[in-house]
Length: 399
Ligand code: GCO
Ligand code: MG
Image (cartoon, rainbow, N blue to C red; front, top):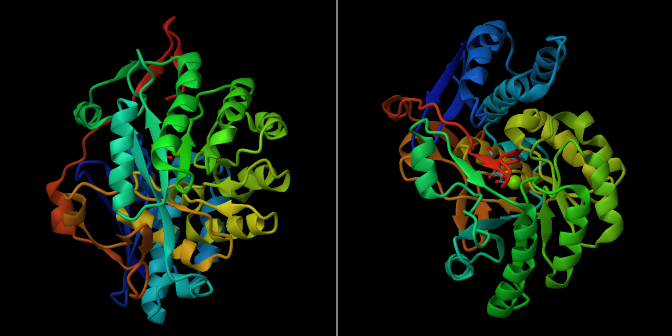
């Protein structure tokens, strides 16, 4: 079998997605996710100009060899653009292998270790009451783990709201004000309020989005420890891995990090020094299914569970890859899940299904998700930036 064509599909059904479709000479094809939020066309160009033409004529069965060649063959390796391109190709090759074997990808990865995958949902409101309402809705929908945030009083919610998203999708630049101190005061109050209203049983998750420095993260973790969060995510910037050691020494709040990391080498010290409890790599950035499976195995040796990144800027293809991995690894922790805009479901058929707090994937060969190319064409790419945060004094902060 030979790779005959590598198509790059860029579509925007509400959000921009970059998709890889690898077509073989036997008519079997596979699809992969190569979306890099905010820099989408950089990846599309790498795929169109370099990776795609290079793959023509290769045997799609040799996933590991293709991975090694694409990773090591660039000499200057790694980084978000090249790793996202490689991840998309890798996913598409697993999809092809599943179709050849007539088995779902989770089966190729070793088979089911569970029947369904526990999911958490986002609940973010401008006020405590609004956040509570969203939590109650998610709980009614069977969910038992919630990622909660609220705008800090006097400050806009740092998360991009639906209104912000509309502006961002028109290429507008959005700058919001943010300060660590009021955020650090607000968060323990939010958790106290939600614990009072929702009780002890629900798991609550906090995503700090790398906005604190190590000592601020320590103080926040100590302040929220009594509310027993399921984990605190990205408490500090990804560059400051050492800061996690300090955080560890001050708190028993479980720590989740990883959506900014690529490859096993990048994750190695997080794991081997046990700086975290949940590893949240993004399958479409870290190196695809091949690399994610290896990283999960390294984490397994340290009793660290996987909580793969599952944001809105990932299409159902990336989410499907997440769930296939979750279904097959022994050290699954929890899966982030989002409900896409209905337009997304015009472009993608299949993909993971949410029911009563859990996710499953269809028992179909491959990833079990496909692209309707005609529908994809309808939704043209729209340049869109990520929001910027600035402090009161005007300086740039982490969004
Ligand atoms: C998450 C993430 C996302 C990111 C987004 C950036 O935990 O889901 O933090 O919301 O902000 O993926 O592109
Ligand atoms: Mg996050």
